[in-house]
Image (cartoon, rainbow over all chains, first blue to last red; front, side):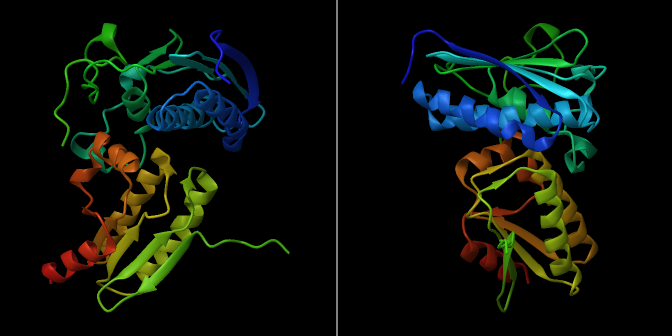
Length: 165
Length: 122
């Protein structure tokens, strides 16, 4: 049943790919309780999975002894998720855009693009080992694919669109 | 004894080998590795095959699956073969559009149109 007070929770899970399953189920169930659409649920699920695998694989270097901290808040009109790994961090601006040139044929490197495409806000801490993501139930007038990152201030937000093909 | 569900079904027609994914969700690295182990032999068993990947059962997949599809497409190319994807639901198709993989994969609404495209390519 939906509540006006956002449901917030903080969990720490071990750094193995399957550890996200339970957390995912709780968050998606809360989204459903709060009448988020199937599109919203799909989007948040995808972003969760991609962010978690990034934390496990790239952040914690697949070390099962390390942990990933997940903080989430599900309100009536938005969901916020922060994910923090124990790695050294990275520069999100250094990730090559997988949509262009030879990168299109790479077998990796699409997770961050998908997170930025499906979430309304995507922000990293200075170290780069923690990502904060928000998805709003009410959408901006136009949702489109993020441009290649050139402007630091609008990272992760909807901006001028690449025309989708 | 635990029943192990196969990750793919393979059907051979006159014109194509149709590989249908059986899982609704394809997420974990182990599952993706298992899929690769199952699908690559289908390509390797003959030169110049027409391979159709059928996503009718797939409701959710991670970006790692896209990497698998690229590896499959490279193998298909090495074997002078052809690849089609079909029955991709709208939410999954959006992932292909966002990543611009619609530019390198030939995607069809159903198996009939995918098979037909292979006949026309002959």
